[in-house]
Image (cartoon, rainbow, N blue to C red; front, side, top):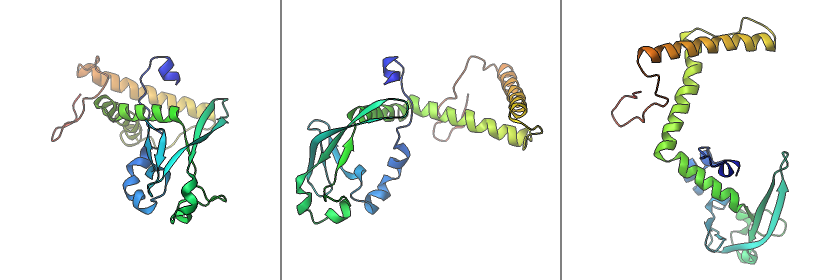
Length: 197
């Protein structure tokens, strides 16, 4: 919401992004998990794996530690009592399978997913991986930096800062030599091609 209000694009992984990549196997193991319930935005309803429709029955409000108040819709159907899969689907005392769903969260999650899976989003993720993981790899393997020589938070922070300075200066020097000072991102790697800058 903050990014949208300030007209900034969001390239943040949705909260359940890693989980959805593994859902193919999970769907078989947990057929009545929430991600197996199909959501219809037009009718604002969920359909369970058994074919029953869960409609909006109420609203739930919650406040985070930072004071942000969120609203979630509560969906369920009265036909759970007749369902032969009720025991596998829910363990609630009333025997009803309830789902909580935030339309606003769903909207921004879908938008973030579309962004990070776009060509630009993939390029940004590739570069983030290169920049972050590669830096630690260079410090440890190329510079032989395996442990701090000082003690105390302040001294350790200062020592780490010197290593970062050395890394950045060397990287900048290499960019000057290779005439890449005006480039910021690596190009997207194509099939059977090396990653170029």
